[in-house]
Amino acid sequence: MTSTYDSRGRRVGATAVQISPNFITQINPNSVQLGVGTKKSVKKPQLGHAKKAGIEQPIRWFREVEKGSEDIQPGTEIKLDQVFSRGDAVKVSGISKGKGFQGGVRRHGFHGGPKTHGQSDRLRAPGAIGSGTTPGRVYKGKKMAGHMGSRQSSAKNLEVVDVDKVKNVLLIKGAVPGPTGGLVMITKLGRIKGYTPPPEEKPEEEVEGESVKGEEKAAEETKIEEVTENAKS
Image (cartoon, rainbow, N blue to C red; front, top):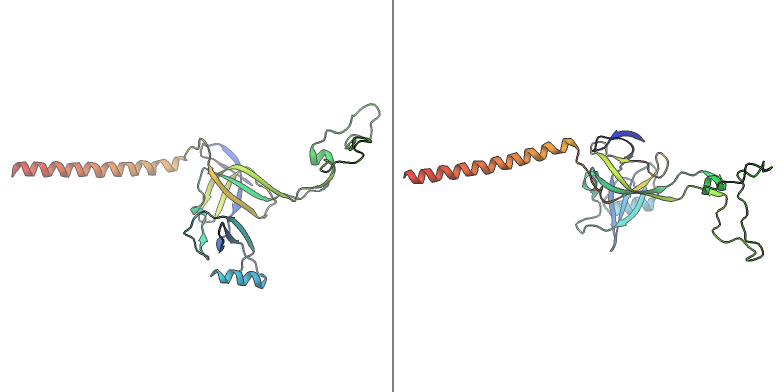
């Protein structure tokens, strides 16, 4: 993670996500298979699957996403600026950090037992887990101590703060699931409500507006000149 400034000029914490080249490896009726990342040793079935799509480099991961456009072909590379831009709302999904075996206080937020009246060893105990004779067992899904983390997790409505086209880095406001170097999937949801364009984007729009006005003014002047010439003749 790092810190940067959003479009409103506020200093915010952001996560830098390195976007590896995304190649279309297979097109299904309702989904598209993407190939991401590379490594030295790849299994032969994966190499053959990538070569069938016209991709020579070894592909490490394969993921399926919903089919958006019909004008796509296997072997096509999807670039960063084709999908994301500043002010986009995204969902980031990944495998959360593994925290090992944890007790009920940390895993589920239990408050623990009383700290007085001789309860010296009951501070972080889970307490009763059953209801007595009826039903005479522990219900499935009872919140107890156990393995924490290392499971699918998603963070929704995160804001894209910056898009670096040269380094293929996406700056996302806030934290994302998973450890450093983990694999995440970023899904575009739409635009952030009340998004304010950064100052560097406004002059370009003004210049474009001035050029259009200038062309219209020049066209009007040529019309006036033609009318005066016709009047003289």
